[in-house]
Length: 329
Image (cartoon, rainbow, N blue to C red):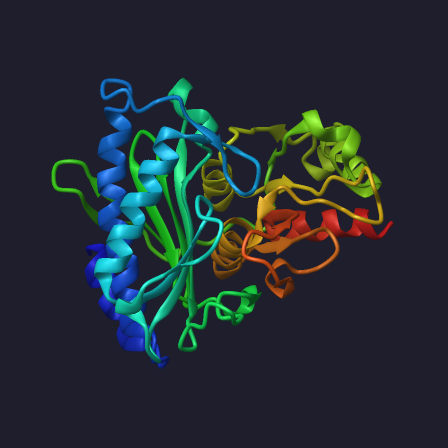
């Protein structure tokens, strides 16, 4: 089954007014992903690696492929006719698209090239996206904001040895693999179910000094040998959220990016809520997993700013529940 065939079936089962727009947008993102995969394969030959100069709104240095990915995603969503606005990591304000305005329009939040620090070393990168109802889209209003429970679809693309697209529209999580010869995606992982418990965790341990005490205690617990509970867990961390979450989704365990707690009164997350944390939370929950900040469900966190940051602990339900227990202690 192709991605478009699967989207047509999903559209038929969804009662919302935005179902047709969802299918159009996800299909368009799949087409963009095929172009991005081709460009990544030739980036060094086309002098597309390295920095473009400057930083984006969230303080990250901008890569040439960040800029290119943002531009090609913007153009594709505009042509879909179903996107009323795009919230992108590479744009300080939402990009309005009159072509998609109306009761069935969608707001798309997207990180076009996630993990771009991996590009210069030929590491895995990805694309993350989230779809929300536009409610007519008012640039002064909260259409793209609110809790993650308002998402109607979410997904990611991973550019690795194969190009994989995973998405959910609220009825399970499904994975597709791209045929490099045609650029078309075919269903290879229907109705993904994350294992109840895993044996691997992913986290940047270089930040250990800034973690919540419960986070430090939990990681120390995972590293301590104990055959009865299947410990120690193995550490796997790639530096690209898409790659780490994809491994966790299929094999179980945890991916964690906790808040910086140097000032306990003002914890600072790293990853962006609208186009990284919330969509990954929806994807994993729809596969039977859990997504938490350590103290609350990720999808219950309300976005009040377009580039708001948040902590995340996501993965197998038993492992995430145990992490939350360490935070409570």
